Amino acid sequence: MRRFRYLLLVLVMIAIPIAVVFAIPTTRFLTLAVIRQESFHGDRPVSQWAYMLDDESVAVRRDAAYSLGHMGEDSRRAVPALAKALKDPSDDVRIDVSLALQKIGPASVEAVGALAEALTDKHPQVRVNSAMALARIGPEAKAAVPALIAAMDRKENFEIVAPFTFSVRMQCARALGKIGPAAKDAAPALTEALQDQEVWTRFSAAYALGEIGPEAKIAVPQLRKCLNDKSDRVREQATQTLQVLGEKPVPAEG
Image 1: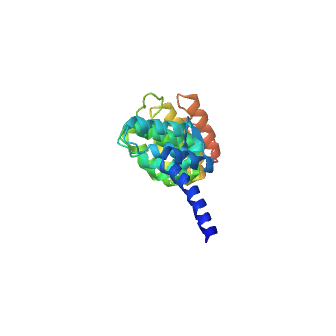
Image 2: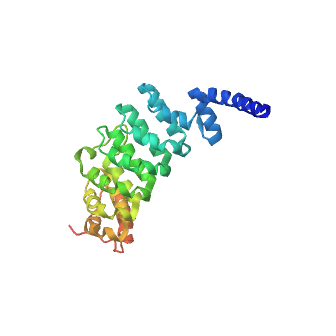
Image 3: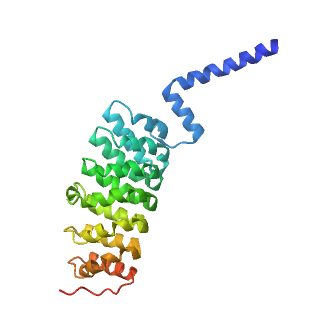
C-alpha cells in the first residue's frame, strides 16, 4: 500500500508541472515545437504563428502570415491554417497569406482548393499571389485548372497589377503551363491569350501551350501568327512551342 501511495505521489509531482506548462499557451507551443522539431521565426515556432492567424488584431495576423512566409517550406505545417486565412476580412492579411502560400511552394498542395477560390478575390494582389502559388505547386494543382481558365477570361484580370509589371491573366497562363498536360482544357483560353496586348501574357500563353503538349494543337494557327510578333521573346517562344507540337515554325501569311 505504501508503495502504491509513493508511486501516486511521484505521478502527481510529475503531472503538476506538466499541467502548468501546457496551461500556458506560449510555454505549450514552445514545448511541443521542440518535440516536433518545428522551425522558428523570431522567438515563435510555426504552430504558434499559425495559431496567431486567428488573433483579433489585424496587425498580429499580418505578422503571423509574414513570418510563416519568411520560413518558406518549413511552414508546411501551417498550410491548413493559411488556407483558412485566405478568407480573412482584411485585404492586407489576405495578401500576406497568399504570398506565404506562394513562398511555401509545392508543400502548399493542401491549399489548392482555397487558392483556386481566391482567384476571385476582390483584391488583385491576392489573385496574383494565388495564381503564382498554384504555379509553384505545379502538376499537383490540376484541380485548379477550371478556376484558372475562368480567371483568364475575366476582364479585370487583363490589367497590370501594381506594384508588379504583369497581370493576373499572365500569372494564370503561367500556372497552367506549370500544371502541364493536365491543363489541356485550357488550350482555347491560352490560344485567345496569344492576342493579348501585354507581351508577358502572350509569352506565358505560348509557353503554357508548349507545356500542355499535343493536346494544344488547336493553337497552331495563332502560334504561326505569333512568329510575326513585335516581341522577340514571343517569337522565340512561339517557335519553340510549334516545334514541341511537331509543327514547322513557318509564319502565317498576311
